Length: 108
Image 1 (cartoon, rainbow, N blue to C red):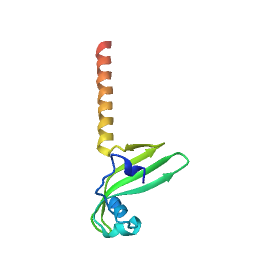
Image 2: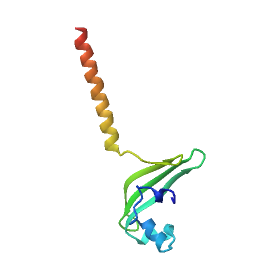
Image 3: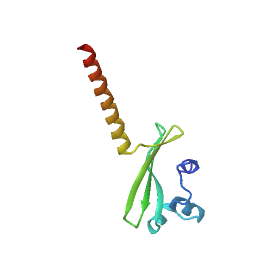
Image 4: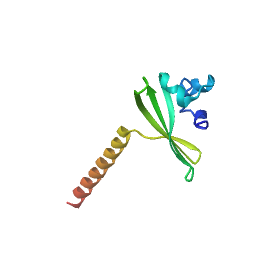
């Protein structure tokens, strides 16, 4: 998380940063705070893969997921959202269908 804190994805007004600056234990203090927070979701040291979630905490039990990031071999990436994945796949399908239609028309 310290490495992720140096990235452009990290937000300085997050609960994480408030806990660091006030020397609070993030794991226990975050439940009483409202705002953005980052959590280490998955740790796989064998393959150098770390998954970090960005969420907005509204209350003790109310947490809205905003995005995921992954750190792979020292490089931080933002994971695509579902809309981006579906849009890219639909564009690919559309291009393939158009190419097929053009080939069929050339055969005639």
